Image (tube, rainbow, N blue to C red; front, side, top):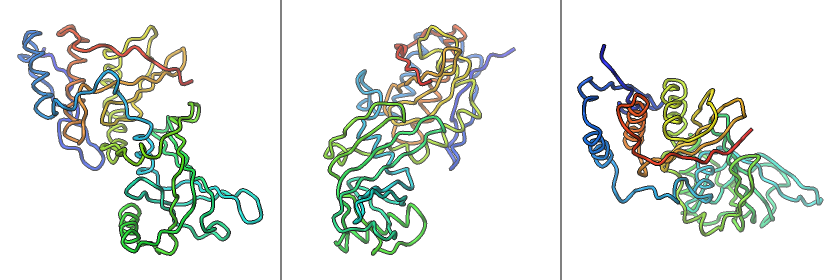
Length: 310
């Protein structure tokens, strides 16, 4: 009987993030541990630049980067202002982000569009039904007047929502402060506006959800094995779900009798496109299978930090 191991994401991702298996031949398993280590490094180097190494301190995006990503992905948010009658008023609004990440809203509600009104705009994006990173922008509600800028915002709106927008209904949040939360039960972090505007949204954001969905539905066994091999814990995992992936790694929720724990598994190199994501998951799943079957020894330092979620 031949021995096989899984290899994830072996064909180009479709719009749904299709994942396909390649199974190595039995002869590949006879390669020595030393040769195997050289092969794995060579595969990674073929698609990932050495300059993109993930350092021990840089295993996840900053709060500013997460906030930029949330703003790019979320279709709507909640605008809060104090009306002319002194009552606080909150209304939902669709929006796009300008080049610096500031929210640009489409407003038609009477009593909301007060010139230069002090306002806050709250945005959140639910990841895999398990985590909701969110941010609140504090500033002034202003009216863009530059014709060139309005044209660019109209183009962004059409790209995001597939429809034209009445430029007279566009209002900008002039950002002065930004409050970021990783999830509802997490602590709050104030993000410096200049750091936010300088940050880049995650390059995987437009297909991350499809990759996560496919990994959980089609390759649950491999997600579980990657956790067992790459993370260190003293309890038995009953179920493991991937909840998000970004250029630096991916987040898992581990279900056990002790509760639900979050764990971050970093990539060995930064990834910036679909090809690099496929290569990283292929390499990790293959190596985890080999370690699990005692064909190889771990070539990484295990993650030891698990945070209880529930």
